[in-house]
Length: 85
Image (cartoon, rainbow, N blue to C red; front, top):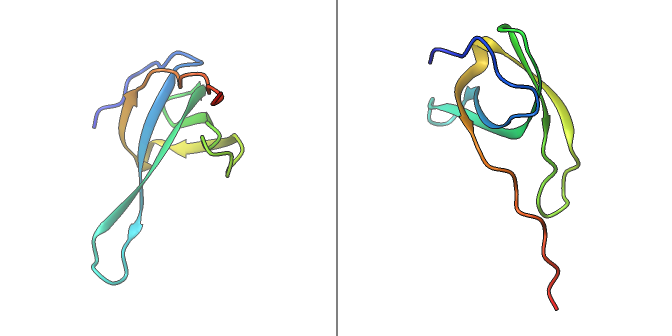
């Protein structure tokens, strides 16, 4: 996939990356990250990964090398959490 020369800082993206091959099936596996862009220098995409919606994982900074990126997709911001009444 051709990657863009520039990505706006703060943009929210889904980034699909190569992970590993499944040892049982030999199939390629992928890992998806959703977060906001901190830096894109055309070699490494640095994002702040969104925390899990259920609170099981805090936000975290992730650096993704260009050669691991399979797909990028802009996505809208998460809706604010509504408390049940």
